Image 1 (tube, helix red, strand yellow):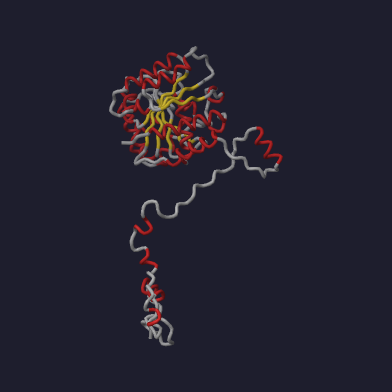
Image 2 (cartoon, helix red, strand yellow):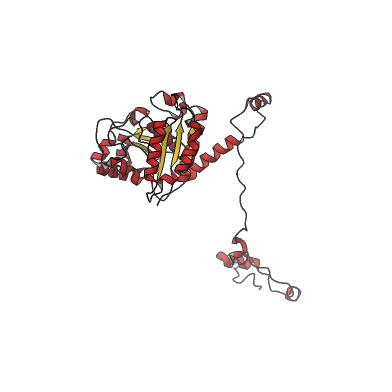
Amino acid sequence: MTDLDPNPSPNGSASRLPGADRARAYTERAKSETTDVIADLTPKPSSWERFSTPTDVLSEGVGWVPPAPKEAPGQWLTPVARLVKVLSFGLAKPQPGQEELAHRQYVRAIRQAAWPRSVRIAVANPKGGAGKSPAAVILGGILAHIRGGSVAVWDASDAAGTLAARAEGAAARCISDIAADPDAYALPAMIAMCAATQTSTADVLGSLREREFTAADIAEVSGVLDATYRMSVADTANCPHSSAYEAVIERADILVVPTVVTADSVNKALSLLRRLQDTPTGLAQRAVVAVLHCGAPETPRLGGDLPALFEKAGVGAVVDIPFDAHIAQGTAISLSALSHPSRVAWTRLAATVVANVTVN
């Protein structure tokens, strides 16, 4: 009997062996009358022996790496590309241009970003009419739409703000109810009563009645939102010295500063950034400025000086947002109603915010 049959069965066939023993039995050469013929041959290692040393196949730079997925055909077609596609009866597959490729990269960056805890975004500019509420709704909507929800946009002002007026629909309760009894909203189902869910899948928690928030209220509401949502976007008020305002800024992981192109709005934004320049959080250095064009008269020659002004302030980035009639109407904002250039710019802003988030 050869080594191939160490435990013969009654009918003479090789017995089935468990695991590696069975594999070894079927891979080793049999010892028989041919031993003198194969004596000079070097035995080949078993399959598991070839991988016994991790460096054999797992060393850095070795192994199969899947190729990058092929980019889908372009969707933002020029008139010429659109004509070619029509004339080819749809057989032509135009390649995406540089702008579309950049947009796709922004979307990937937003979708794939991850942090060890809930991220808090503060939208702030002490100047009224700077576009804080629209910026909060759209930024939160873009993030939620791309990341699949779990984003809260909330009214963090010391007095009731206008956030609810820019949301789609209304909730049964509001942010004041959470501040009054935070323990009652420990479950997501309860928070849903205070949230107006948008078509973007973001939840807007506005104010339905007059109220006053202090630093303690901000801490209570933030704790509830942190336990339910992966990201929150706080819409602040116009009083940087109130305890509520300071509490929002203190807890923020990233600061978004919207401004229109007027001297008073820009100067208020710069004043806020200078005030935060020496804080240990580094908010000013990572801040993202959104320059909004709202269709109203702009301060002459200011637009061209903005990049230099904010670069001197040491911010993380400046993103230009084109005029959008849907935003300028002052009513509820829907992502689907934004113009194409506007939506592209807001997505770039969201990607820039995600890139500058630092969670300690």
